[in-house]
Image 1 (cartoon, one colour):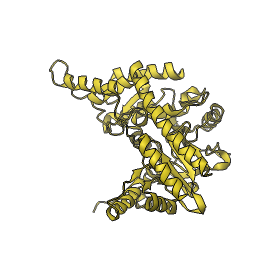
Image 2 (cartoon, one colour; image 1 turned 90 degrees about the horizontal axis):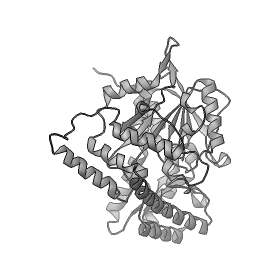
Image 3 (cartoon, helix red, strand yellow; image 1 turned 180 degrees about the vertical axis):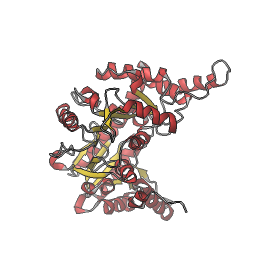
Image 4 (tube, one colour; image 1 turned 135 degrees about the vertical axis):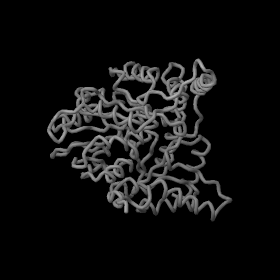
Length: 398
């Protein structure tokens, strides 16, 4: 009889957002007359911008003609998209990348999970608490030793390096779920720590386009020394509304190495390429053409207009919480607002209270880790009217 990977048995019975969906569905069945406003899952609501749609339409036409038809594409992505991303890093962040350091994927979530294929289960992994659940779950599937970095109000939800060494480090800035963002100096401390111990930083930059404060880094590679200790994951889901279209990219520097069991230095760029060519067939030509349009001047302008729209939602949420005297974090460099649960309620208690009394859905902080207990995440990914209505409903019951 076949045997399972026993590490899967250590996972929670239900993925956080599956439990949220289950409770919302049950409420909807009991109260079909109520309009539910969803501010829980980080799914965008604005459609793809015009230049992306135009590029995808043209790509569809390409697929209808023999001379421009595309079959299997390169697993690491077409050069036209990788070149666009290369230029984006140089122009927007002053970061120089080689074309073969950029790998196109179907989203940051996939790559953040799949990157564990490269690493031994014997590694010690640092993961912030609270955190995006995929970091924890994929390492539990692998069976690595997890050490949690305590993120709380005292450190602004930006934990710094511990005294002991580690092998892998997960950082997300701007952060999901707390909305906190590391400063340049703070990231330099992490880069120096990683280089000192030979550790690898797995840097989730999915929300880099939401950074609005001057001086905050949008890429780990803006920090000197990062190319010898970091892998960066980014996504077009929140930047350009690709949640249902699926496209992201991962940067694996050619200077980045890790050790084999024989203590030999191995290039991770080559390992990731080998992994992708074996287990991944690439993102479709049509989607990659749409993604390339995001990085044109017109595309950047149009997507920034959408991001500004979501920022206004975040401002409305923050203003409502301030009016009610409820402390919160985020909402400035991030689409997430991390609020304290009122009246001493725990996270799931407040989830149920808000759903039952206001028909508003958020995400319980406890689902992101022990330090998330007593907090609640709201997202700015809605329309102005629904956001305003949700805040009015909340203010009436808080």
